[in-house]
Length: 176
Length: 176
Image (cartoon, rainbow over all chains, first blue to last red; front, side, top):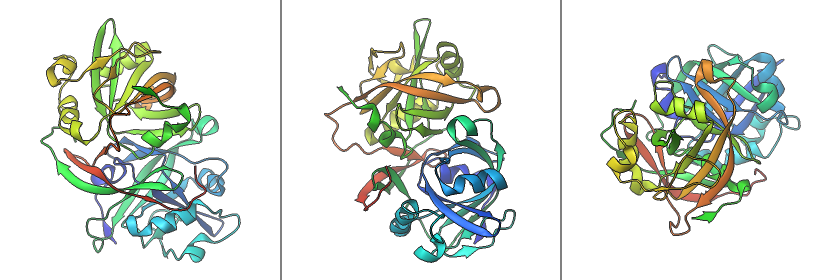
């Protein structure tokens, strides 16, 4: 895993990929699958996400104020679905589905070595948590796996249907 | 344009496509390009988005509390970039870029006939507007163009680079 400059983090989340969110609370780690997230600010990178209070991860995220966002490529799609269809209340998902934890640098939540990118995050605003389960987070440190070249991400269309990244096009633009 | 059930709206936004946001204020319509949005609730569908206060659309959205989210397919990518690189302060973007306005049913902001989906929206929460330019909106009515079969959306990776929808896969899942 190599450092990714924080100024480039938005380029990973803005396209809307399915991500995994890891937490650690009282020594117990967990991971969930998430699609409801968006960028809020470029740098330092901030984003928002919805973590349902029905999820086991909710209390861990709220209590510890920390998580890791790990971005899986296409080859991890089946595991991402299994993670989304089970609960950390019942099983250790890392062991059950063969996901490799690695220690993070700034947070207690683990990185996932199988993912091509990992973002260490802290919660910075909880004003909309009670009403919408909406958290605002800042990315403290970002990692990229240089061994995974041109990873194709997956985007959830509901009920286990995903669209995989296809062609890349570049148009002349002044947009960041 | 045909009715799309509100229960299906999240399937359009959850994958994270580039969208167009239209407004109407004092008889003047405008359109901007946006990628920072996420679903917040399934039904009635609510979503969040960031509209920079530097954008001409910001005041229109804030003042009228209404907009339309129009989703362009691949063939509109070049127009979406032109919309994102110009300001409604200076030009009528609909006329300049050949985008076809259609009246909406529940809001004053126009639909865009060229887009395969259109969502009529009202702002429902402005608590995080001052700090993050973050709006919470509800979709009141949704339209789909049945003539555009299997539209491929575009996802922004920064600086005019977009990834286009590729292969679709379906995995057995209990996730909605």
